[in-house]
Image 1 (spheres, helix red, strand yellow):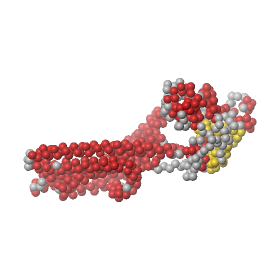
Image 2: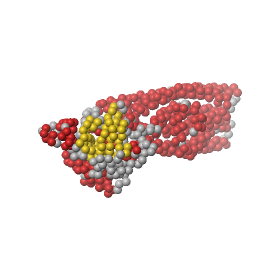
Image 3: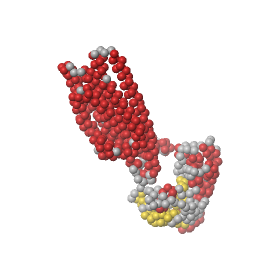
Image 4: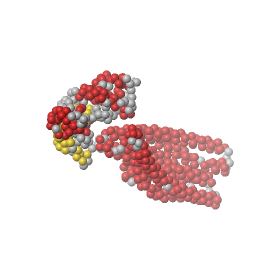
Length: 599
């Protein structure tokens, strides 16, 4: 890689460009080195054939048109056929090889990007919109391929072709060759001047394209809300703004890139005009070789296109490197929350969970303040309180999506930060109000709880979740597709699939977040019965705004503003009064006060 850096530093640009470029080659060139070598050798052959087609013009002019040597007509014609046959096959093999390398590289980089995204913690997904992540995975890998292809093609095709044609020019007329190359310095200066503007505009274009993806994704996922609230005009306006910005930036980039054309066309025209005047003067006044002149002018004309592409090399490379830099931003992102170097595997069949004076804040706003609570082994602990009390944050800390800013979360007396993140989460099962299912079969979604489960275990979990009957009534039973996000199922059916998934996980810690809200009475009864089976032998945390669903909990913690303000069972809290009794009275305001007080 030091060879690449030393050899092409002036040609490619400064260190800020070479850094990601050298890294890109180091990581992706070696696996394909042999195939790249083959492609480059084919490009060299094609370049030599191109030079040969220019060189043979001398014999066509001198031997056929001037000397009128009929014997050489077929020889030269055969040579032309051979030259172009070799060039055609060499171009074919180099093109196919580079395409296969590029496709393999894109797939490989997309896998690396996807793995990097999956490694990230919750903070990463709060910081990056879905559209941004999708663009980075889909487009940035292609940008990396474009950058490598551009360099390989520029060196293997354009540079070798240009060198071969310049060699023909030098052989035919060294003086005209030297004078023709005087156009290079002003061309390089003009292109370099455009680089900074292209870099800035290309980065903005990628970011704005991500906004388009985000708007479309939100429109599709929230289509019921869009239709219900008549948000089409607002979303259409936002989409029009985003597409308008992309259009403006694309036009800006195209305009900047196109500025190289008049520069190169003008300089090329001057070079060709000078050659015609100089060469014509030599032929008219000094009887110079006309075949050599036409061979020279042919080589010069054929050299124009590769020279123009090389002149644009920096512009095109800069656009590709925008995506490469953004790709490495994802690959280099280090999750804020990671397992400690000396972390151990979590291994426990039952769990007592303790929050020991836990503090936590999202940014500057405190959410939990010295929170202390305990969930004994195999108990049911309910968390109630107004919105914003910190209940969901408790769940996030148990699953270690975040770490406390103060205090500790303990399982069986051990700080969960002593466990590896992955092993801790294998001991936790979650059922939420907004059940998410993957677009696959029913069986596959249940098996997500424990991928190595047998079909019999999957079906047993479905029975325990009161889901077996409706699953078997579906067209393909357990092989029926649930649709994107579970869209082919009702809310209650999705919930029972989620419960079956949690049952199959056999985790000692269970988190239930509003698991029975927004359901009709029959569905709620089925799910409550399934949850009763699920909670047996597990330490269960329950969040529920409907207090009727938590009255049988072993311990109820009443939270307000990040603190526990009351603790006890339902009867104790009702007798005590306070926030719990107030919340219950609000939910049962149609009951008589004494009936409310009686619980």
